[in-house]
Length: 118
Image (cartoon, rainbow, N blue to C red):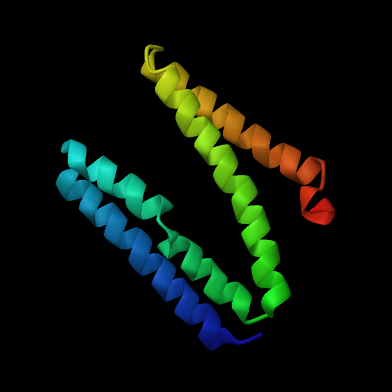
């Protein structure tokens, strides 16, 4: 186990999430903040971060990561579309529906052992 790599990855992750949290405190009530946050969260920069980690183990791990990233990204896209289509529902219901479906997706992913099949 290479602790310097773990420390570096931890530092980068903390820096990214800490920056997002700090910006959230400053711009919480500005509509542009959430638009920018959504873009930064979904832009391939986060994909790069994890691809970089996977690349240390070899190309097959990069390919496998990419396949499962497609699965997760597709499900996230479906949740985003559903949220937009159901925007007329009460906010709390919409949030809990997203939580329920996201947890269900994760449970199905592990329950059906998708990581072993694909």
